[in-house]
Image (cartoon, rainbow, N blue to C red; front, side, top):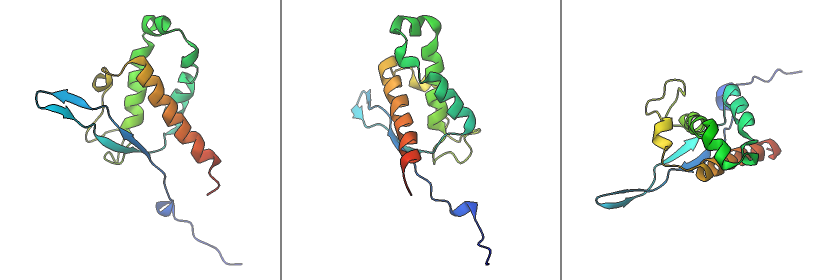
Length: 127
């Protein structure tokens, strides 16, 4: 029986395309930046699981508990794991939670749900 070598560098990866909100400046609208986000690390995946129940929490509770700040931090962590940043622990162009402050709670939950859907689709992909 022949031994087949396995090379981790040749694993096909799937990425999640993400476009930031358009911004407005004195010259008009600027289209949002586009990035390609990788699958999460184990630590990030566990944080995402903790937030999956957030949709069941009343919005006033979310604001009172400071959950929105934690949600911004989680989304920043997810988005920092992109192709522009080969090392997500020390990204070249970090996305900070403060950069996401103009995203309201509905937008944050929609982003998180879309990313969770992306992860779920990969689990069910037969290839």
